[in-house]
Length: 141
Image (cartoon, rainbow, N blue to C red; front, side, top):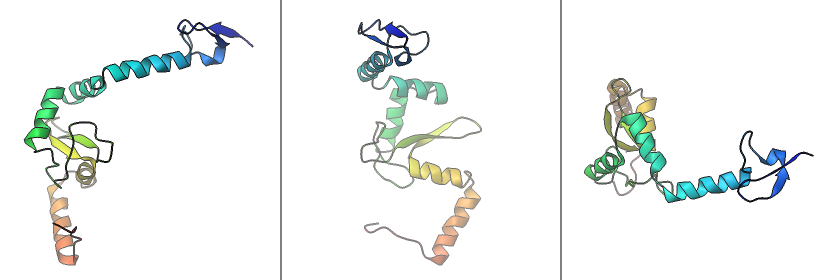
């Protein structure tokens, strides 16, 4: 079995413990990646926002604050973080033709708009349908 010495930990390991053309083993590279992500928790989010929507992380936080930290459709509380611990994930809602950002929505409301193809006629007909046939109203609303 062919082996190779890791440039990070110095251990000799089987060649399949390395990515092609990388001097460090997979375990060491994964650990370095974890440390890097932990040291810059918002780096990927900020980069994604800038690349996809042309907005900064500060602009993202400003939009959430302007919505009183709630989804503007269902009014569920949303966080200014990635929100995966007991809260609905949040998404940047934007016009797919112009790229203009409309707001920050919870993922369920964003999916609802997508399933309706962002068509106000379809959404209106859904309201009429639910009104005529009995809609579910959550307690406390």
